[in-house]
Amino acid sequence: TTGHAVSLLTWPSIDCVLSFTAGQNPDHVLQGTGVKPGSDSRRPRGDSTLAPEDAARFLSCHCSGHCPDDAKNNTCETNGQCFAIIEEDENGDVILSSGCMKYEGSHFQCKDSQFAQTRRTIECCQFDFCNRDLKPELPPRDTEPPDPHWLAFLISVTVCFCTLICVTVICYYRYKWQTERQRYHRDLENADCRIFVGSFFYLLCSCSFLQVQRTIAKQIQTVRLIGKGRYGEVWLGRWRGEKVAVKVFFTREEASWFRETEIYQTVLMRHENILGFIAADINGTGASTQLYLITDYHENGSLYDYLKFTTLDSQALLKLTYSAACGLCHLHTEIYGTQGKPAIAHRDLKSKNILIKKNGTCCIADLGLAVKFNSDTNEVDIPLSTRMGTRRYMAPEVLDETLNKNHFQAYIMADIYSYGLVIWEMARRCVTGGIHWQIFFVFKVLKMLCSCWIFSTLSCSWSVSMSCWLPSREAWSCITLCCNILLFSCSKARDFCTFSSPSFRSSAVGIQERLSNIS
Image (cartoon, rainbow, N blue to C red):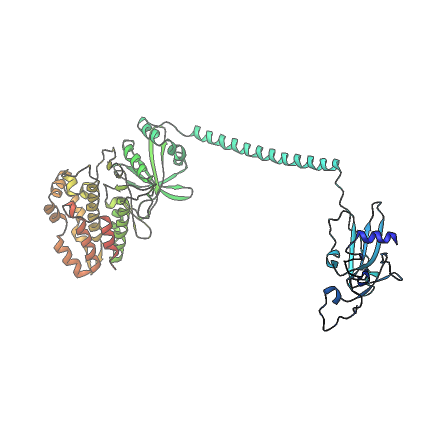
């Protein structure tokens, strides 16, 4: 009995403790039950308010090792729960016991902590003698630490394996790098690196560009000659399985090649109506040096060649004139920003420098004479080339040398004049209303002129030149208005471009808007 009492003091929530209060009889508290004497242990009164422990059902439980002093036949009574507990003592012996648990704190005691210092398990139930069938089991022991020798072996194997993988990867990439380096040096040795003295200026100004793109000339296979001019030749080539146009400059046209490369590399220069630039390169053939400018290839060729064999309807004419105006507008427009685009004037706009794409639109090419305007310094960047534009497309102020070379707007207006002549050249190949405008024979007449001096003399006088090789504005407007409203609108756009006074000519944006409004 003394041993049982010690156990009851060890488990205050399980064992019954006598509570003595001043002025109360100890018989009023039942040991181990939590029920006051005089109350019905089975059923509370219907007209009274009872505490939860008084209202709880009174159970009979089997007790062993945790029996109260008044227990008979290993039986105890409680208003809480029956329990069975198994625990391990200090000597490692397993002790299984059972008893009654009073109502107060029973829900917490039945949920034993898994972090208890001793190994034990408690199970509870809530009907008579239910703890006889409870068979709690001790929790498993904590896993023992692994053998230090085995742990050291695993760590050693893992480190060796990772080191082997790292060494293998490093060796692979080093071998790959050496192979690429040998191939690069072999290509440099095979390439002819002799560059003529004149290109040394380009090498200094654009060294990084040459280092990256100079070998592209060795990768291009030229197929056939497709054009020839005063600057050099144009070849159809193949690069990486695609068709490209290779513009080969004569050595004396190095300034034009350098200038055109510089213009094409301008930020935000790409536009659907500007010829697409791929690369520029210097190719040494042993006896000579070739300057390559590689661009997109358009099988329809130039507008000049296209109009020789193709007649246009009204919609095709509008498509050509509008797309050419869009390209010219992009050139003339300055784009502001941290990486903006300067305003650019073409200075050699003609039908031979406009290419026809597959979709029937134009793209402007040949920017070797282009000038740029620096809005920060208000200066015009003029190329060093001595090459001049085509006389038959020059504005009157260019022919009579009255153009203000320090005023960028003067170059813009000269481009507008040339564009107006291109419009007329396209319109003369338009068939509408049964009338074919080839009857004017403009270039046949011009080629009959005995010298450029005669043409210059004629063109300097606006009234004489227009009466010689262009129909008058009144005649043009009358004929086209009777035939087609669209052609009449194109003629009006041409009129706004070809005024003898530059101040009366329209801008590229104005022409673009005028043509876009034509339905």
